[in-house]
Length: 76
Image 1 (spheres, rainbow, N blue to C red):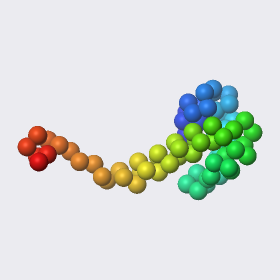
Image 2: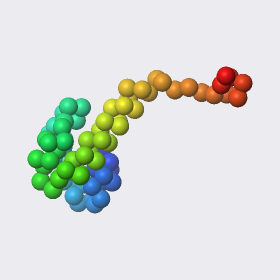
Image 3: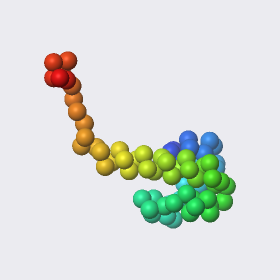
């Protein structure tokens, strides 16, 4: 998780601090406004973090929705 925040906010020192601050929240229910309460997080960073969390939730929810196409004939 820490590496995700480092990449999202663009710096290791800042990413670690934000990661530790965000750990106070239930990430599945956090809002952009709550993220903006963290020192050093403005609207853009909050939206990046929020969208990354939602992308993760989507990936988890649709983990079983994988289709494997083994040949072109099976596509039709």
